[in-house]
Length: 337
Image 1: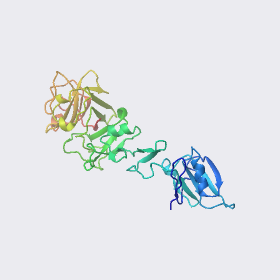
Image 2: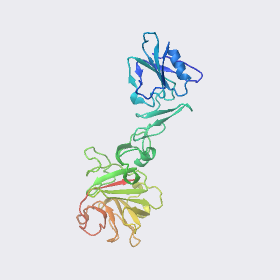
Image 3: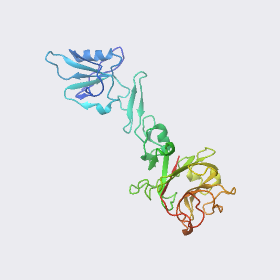
Image 4: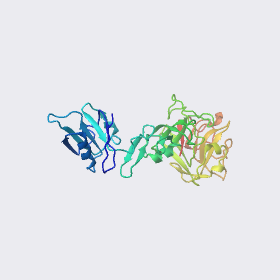
């Protein structure tokens, strides 16, 4: 059942039977006893701070109804909107009335402009929170309070048919990192692209699809020590892994943070029988590395997973990884932003 009332404030008041904020919603502006519901509605309409009211379902011994004027509404205090056998609840007409926001988003009414905004649940984006984030950086940019965890990503922002799960690191170096894999040996970037709940982020075997994530920064995490380092592309032009396999020269030079700053760095993205994964190292002798040839670089810091060659197994984190059998296996993760 629904009651409607119009007044000079041009608001529609609706009664939803047996629903009440109750006094726990927020402080009550005022409580008065009225002969009927119209008087309670008029009292709210004439108060600029009133956005809803509770009206007693039953009169007192004098035949009057308790009327509580409230400075908020069910859209801004949904968690306190509870069933009540003794009150009807009435709200001024709200732009949120038709529930325009999707995916458990909160509709925030702007009564002055007769408009609304949708406060999206974590991981959702768009005017009505209808879409997934394209990457973790975009989610972080939209919601600075976004926390570390698994999110659904849709890099092309399309029909969601190719959306996938990925772990977002929302804290390291201001957050927004789409974490691609965790391994203590090697990883196949082109084929190992599906998240498996049996291998959560931070455990050997965590994988997701980073091939089509635009990025200008690469993060390496050493889970053994907790150390982290990241690299920033000097040109600041976004690239995608799918377009640069085996071509370090195409990615240009990178600056390191959390590592030796005396080097310009290079990024190599590989899916080769000798080496596969993201590989950052210093540029030495003006030589850009290839997936199977590392320029004889025995001096710069390496950040790489293991080679399939038994001579170059082990994982390098901020140490030179060229000399055969110089590094041991260790658990690292790589992310993009």
